[in-house]
Image (tube, rainbow, N blue to C red; front, side):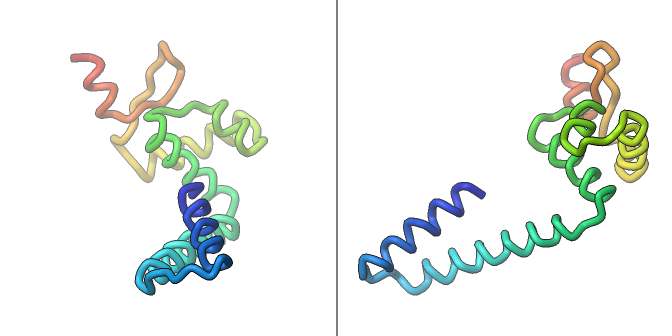
Length: 117
């Protein structure tokens, strides 16, 4: 997202200075920005419970793991509510995670299998 913002600012500066820019490059950049804005708008209007489930998926994609504290801190919710959300996420994504009791976190199942080899 920050890369997109920077590219938009550079393109804007180029236009402000009167520089000619390639037609295709500006429309592709604007299409990308519009898509990102639509995605952000959808996330903002999403019910809180759904946003928390999406957050869990994002944590797994970025870090490979998550725990209840991650969700509690990000959304200012109670531990029991985070546990409910985790259970809902696991029901929707059966077999995608395993619980690492020594690290007290949920991890991508493939990562856990590799660490046991």
